[in-house]
Picture 1 (cartoon, rainbow, N blue to C red):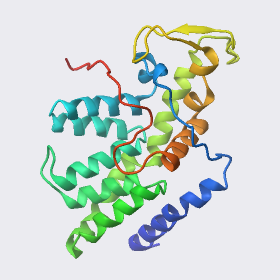
Picture 2 (picture 1 turned 180 degrees about the vertical axis):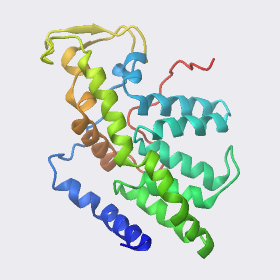
Picture 3 (picture 1 turned 90 degrees about the vertical axis):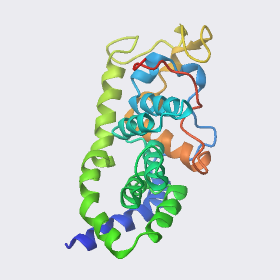
Length: 241
C-alpha cells in the first residue's frame, strides 16, 4: 500500500468512527461527566491526561504559553484529544512558538483521530490552508508524531496507569469496593465533602474501556468548540513552583 493510500485509509476510518462508536456498547449519555468533587490531587495523579491538561491551562492563564504547550504535549502522551487540539491551535496561531501550519495540521489530525465532529471540521480547515509543498511535509513528518502520540500507543500508555491505580484501590484484592465506604476528600474544589466509594471508584473513571466510552460521551454531548473539556476547570498544585 502506498503512503498516500494509507493516508486515505486512515481518513476514511476517522470519518467512520462516529458510526462505529454508535454500534459499540458505549451508549449515549448526555449527563456523562467527572464530578468536581472527585478531582483531587490523588485522582489527577492517576489520570495524567487530566493532570497535565490542567497544568497546561494553569500555565496558559498565567501567560506562559511555551510552558503550556509542553504540558499539553505531556497530556497528549496519554491520548488527551483536547490537549492535542490545543497544541494544534498554538502551532497554527504561533502562540508561544513559531507558527507552523504543517505541525498544526498534524496535531489537529491526531486530535480528530476518533472522529469527533468538531475536530474533524477544524482539521479540514487546517488542510485547506496548506500548499502542495506543505502537504508533502505532512506525509513526511506525520508518522513520527503518530508513533508517539497516536491512540495506538497513547491509549495503552494511559490504560497502564489506570490499571495500576485501580489495583491499589481501597477495598479487597478482588476489586470489590464496599458501597457503604465514605471518603472525606481533603483537597480539591469540594474538599471535606463526603463521597461514596461507588462514586469515586466508578468504572467510568478507572476501567480503560469505560473511560474511553466516557470521553466519547462527553465529546458527543458537551464539547462544542475549544472551550469545553472532560471535567471542569479547577485549581491544581503546580509542581514546578
